[in-house]
Image (tube, rainbow, N blue to C red; front, side, top):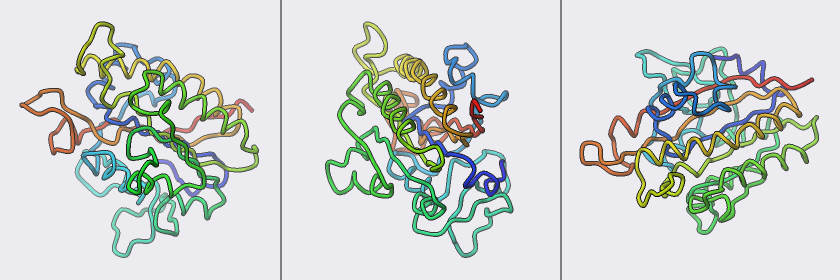
Length: 268
């Protein structure tokens, strides 16, 4: 774990959730060299296996923004990168950045960060009060149908928007950029030629598509500043295993998620 107190105010922060991405798929595609842009930035050990604090998008993200990211699967007390003032917490360590406020977004804003959300799935679409809850944490938030689950080019639009934001934000202004990648969420059958329904194979094809767009994002980040990055899934999903389909259920394929954190160095 990085000492986040040495990163705050000197690094930009990027937090990406790959909505619904399964750990087994992420690990397999990385081993098969089918996600080269992710491979170019992930630690040498690859994806870390962790447990999500929630089994669907809203629950998981509410936990994330309260400072509870996916937890290492090994037994023990695991200090967290970010935490809010919480009496009695045993997971606030010397490397934890302790923030003030009702969520870590507001806490980072108090540290001088400009906070931006690029939404993806329905809980970010701002079309009703519920789907405004998470976006309203941020100083700026974006959603359109082009960024959502029904657009096969959603990641391209999300990355292009992120690049525009990165370019427009002054380099001396520290930035917390959050992106909820929507492409892996159902429907994802259109990423697999000839497919009519969502399957584990179309899930994998969706991840390949997402990866194809990420190189442009890494390049844009490096042009600004050193960036502390957290990449993870919010939860997995099922495709008929043990009779289950979907998520919002407690199954190992749902609560087991890929996680990575690293620093992306600027070109300077």
